[in-house]
Length: 141
Image 1 (cartoon, helix red, strand yellow):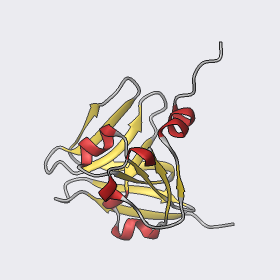
Image 2 (cartoon, rainbow, N blue to C red; image 1 turned 90 degrees about the vertical axis):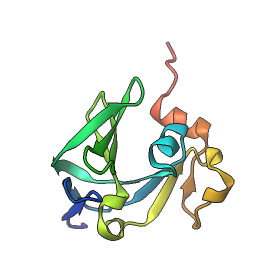
Image 3 (cartoon, rainbow, N blue to C red; image 1 turned 90 degrees about the horizontal axis):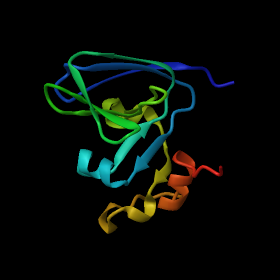
């Protein structure tokens, strides 16, 4: 069994600090329109386990009916993408040195990525249809 380890990160100015627990950390990239507008690139998130402790001056912006974006209110660093129905926060991989040593394992909306944003590797690349089916399955009723 892989042991859990605690990681600590911070925003660009250092005013916001983040502590999290990871067991098998992975990095995920999202190429959706909102992530690209929010970060001017793809949003790279780090999968964490359990509790996340965020300290410092942050704000949130509700970017859709079911999601929010967290950012440092001093320097504007992207802190997380979160789902409002369950409070899950997908932390920005850039908050942590070397993205906590996690490998890139998954791309969401890979078919929507601008041509210049191609990422190397043999990780899973989900299309828009696959991503929407995962996060927003249609009601069969």
